[in-house]
Length: 196
Image (cartoon, rainbow, N blue to C red; front, side):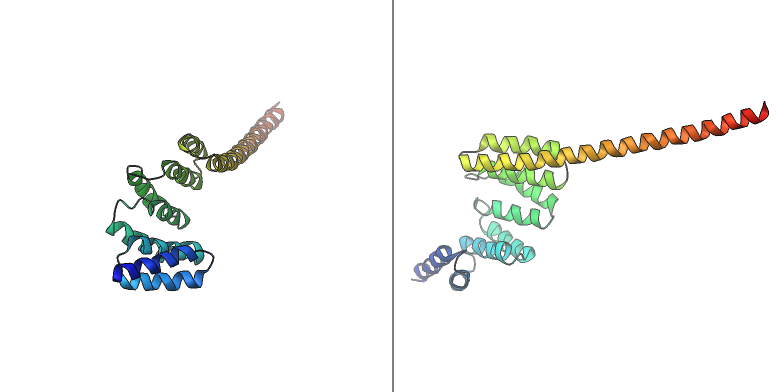
């Protein structure tokens, strides 16, 4: 009987999330009170904290508990990785991605997209572009491919802006060196003229 009640509350929470947050959270609290180790319930509670409340530390704890209970819960990994990225825990996110790639049933295109996000956040734009192209190749739906195209465009703009800034900085450094040479040459010429 408790399992049916637990499932009923869990279904209500899933049905109401994210549009009826109050109802969703109430149902989720009931579901987790019946079964505190329900992976789906923990996952959804983590989503509430990450997506609605932006409390990434609490969200991480829910996702970690869900994964500890069922390490093969493929549906938890994408949300957990996104929380880690949003929380700037790039090293941990990379480790989770490395593991998640081998989890049966995982959306490999989405994992590759998140790998690209990490590289973009670390300003490794060339590697991000390669990874995003891989994500596009792994994609199995057009909407995702179009989204990856938009991300690729954004990353390419960032790469070009960085390259332009580097060129401008190099040109300014060259001009300063030329001015210093001219100044040192001018001193030497003045010294020679004074001697002659």
